[in-house]
Structure formats: C-alpha cells, structure tokens
Amino acid sequence: MEEIRPNLQADGGDVELVEVTEGGIVKVRLVGACVGCPMAAMTLKDGIERLLKEEVPEVQEVEAV
Image 1 (spheres, rainbow, N blue to C red):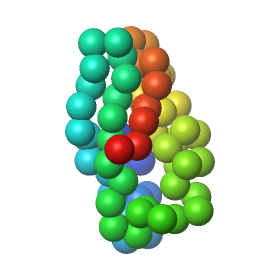
Image 2: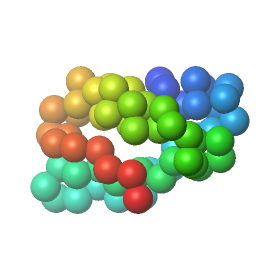
Image 3: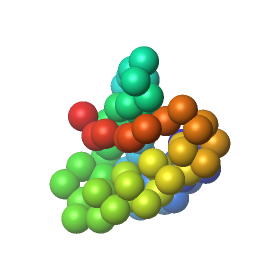
Image 4: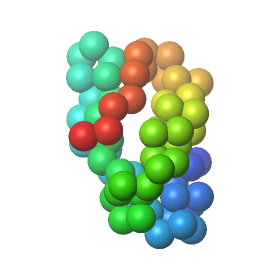
C-alpha cells in the first residue's frame, strides 16, 4: 500500500488498513478525497489489490469498508 499511497495523497486522499482476515481478505478504508470519488473502485482493484497480490500471494481480495 505504501507504493500507491503517495498517488492517493497527491489527490487529497489516502488509504488505511482495517483488517486482514485468515482467508486472505484485506479490508481497507479509503479516506479524504477518495470517499465518493468515481475512480475509487478502479483504484482499489487495479491499484491497491493488484499491488498487494504481487507482494503477498496469500491476498485473495481487497475490500473497501
């Protein structure tokens, strides 16, 4: 998440780790300008989830809470 965080912060947003379940579900909270942003879903799946899966193979999915 640290790789994508500067991009989010540059646009006035950020991401917070909420929970990692035993089943490999990573729950995050998008904050700031990311809340309600039409690009948030794409950022979550194509950015955060993709990067986490590359770095941590046990990650199955990333969900916004």
